[in-house]
Image 1: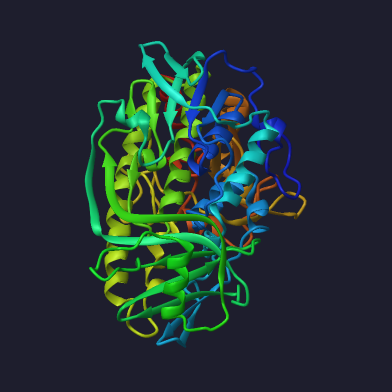
Image 2: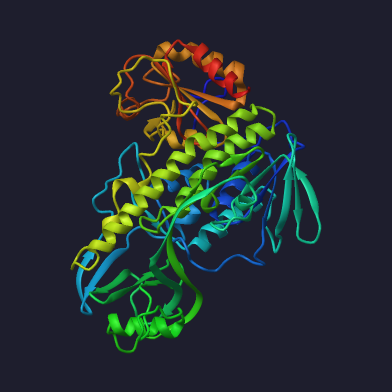
Length: 534
């Protein structure tokens, strides 16, 4: 049971009312610039915590280009915690086979996720194929449920900051004062360029692709088609819940060997050359772009009251589909911290941990996607191998954590080789409540609170004291065979968390382990939460 707050019955996720602090809206606010997946995720995380937030987007309407087209396993966990996973799953699919062709003939069908199996601690291991515009639509709808709407056709033209606030100027002359400004405005971020921030890295000029969204009547939408030959290739990936394929290809070259400007006509010529399927015509090009590989990262993610997230902070190759996912996870890390700071419930120093935790992840992402890009470039022309090779355990995102973080604290003197440590992603596990109803740890974590798990009867007193002292900011649960405890009936929770004896595990609002301690060490919990308050 949740100590001090009654028992769990069935699905125990907090209601939307529970998720909003009862203290009322803070007077300070946050301005987010950029309404892609990163900005929208951050806006949702702030709005559901009661923060006053505005999100502006200079484009006059939502973008139609597919751009990113896949959510990895960790992003699915994030969106379950935000209460929108079912909406996204209804618009995507996780069972698409990659069909490889050679000389126009199919040579292999591959399920790139077949090598992964879900487990009690990791229920999602398959990526979800979904057009980025549908991800954004679901996030906009969720944001609107908290009373916040994207302000399209609204451009930030300048900003100034002091020790106390940021003054932002919008096109048309509107000036507003906010507590913090967050740049989610893409790889060419104007906010980043206005800051004393470097964006070091490289552009691989020769490694370019043409990309576009087209329709191709008569071509199966149950396969990701990949025609690769010695002289180039083309790939068409169906976008679920649409009639559209995302086309990716090496650019067509003219007689001098120079790339031809991407167009529907050049797409058709590339398709005819490599696919060799008469009668298939590409039509309705909603979006056409030329892509060059950039590997760059800001040296800072925070300058005073201005922060950067997503592509504004880091860009890399598309291999592995990490771009949209890394931005979403930036926002999930930053959201709970920024909400606590603007509400006056945490010290300003908490925002330093955003850069402390996410900058190394960005560096890892650039290295990992670059390695995948080079590996695919080498192997893609071999029959039956290629793009599916980028799908490795790394790209699922489940192994990424923050063990180095100042927010990762251990007091339980566990062995150095303990599998799960403070800073790691907190795993799921199936449990039963006092009435015998099934409940998962992820359902317990869902919401805006910290979660304190107590393993063993010796932790019960610490759980009660935490519930009494911290109220709704920390939800406390006893796990074990005792009356009123959540029943770890198959022992998955104990195994996943590596618990021996009585123990306390404090889980952050973003689903990472904050603290581990002995079952009776309630002082460690109080000290940790007190330190957040500055």
